[in-house]
Image 1 (tube, rainbow, N blue to C red):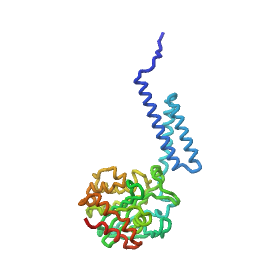
Image 2 (cartoon, rainbow, N blue to C red):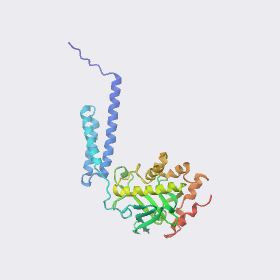
Image 3 (spheres, helix red, strand yellow):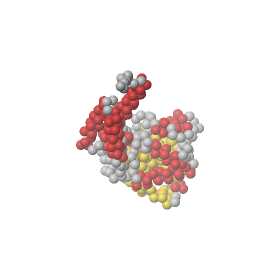
Image 4 (cartoon, helix red, strand yellow):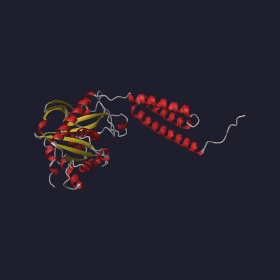
Length: 340
């Protein structure tokens, strides 16, 4: 007669089972939370809250029943994850929506040797953030006359977070600024959390400084700093062309904005890596308010004086606010950078 042991399993197996269940429950909790946020930003309005409630209830039941029916629960969770993954991958970016006026057009370029024609250059005249004259222009630039590259950092609240723009200056006195921005639909508001959940497309805006920089210095009253980049003419040219390549690519194949991996600063970094693949990734690229510190350490901005002095001289908002809207805006904001 066989003897069936009723002794409890060894302690190490009980501990392993406990750890496994805890890890599984933690993973289900994280996935359920992610799904709830994804549904909040992407589910159709009439079904949004029922879908979120169903997801949360399913997650709770899964956590409570995994100990009794681990195999069945595991299979059901895998099926749910595959279904959600399929739904998530079906959400595609588009260039065809009812866009807000200031991001209605992304820049595109026609390149004929050194002759560059930019289409949809933004040249708005801003009186307030809601009152403006929308103007989109076409401009031709001589790449051989490219003289300067400036990086602008614009802080609106938290000094650790800034919007990054890059301005290219030409011998004829014109500047064109590139800015990677969220492409809001009409009536839509920016959400940093939404930026993780395919809420916005990415758009590359090309604009005059009297538009896109003045909007930040004079209208929004943000703290804007301008740093001339110390790069060779070859690097400046390559960076400019990289922006054009990215702009043309977005016009054909749209992309989603992503708060961490595809934003105004990481786009600059990715383009810079096309020039120098050895540029190291750094936390200050993500926490973009500290980007000037990174540039200083890399020798990409002036280093002949302490960083604190470089930052002080780079601030342009005060001077810009004393200048009326005019074509001389670019000239007036730059003298603050002169001197030691």
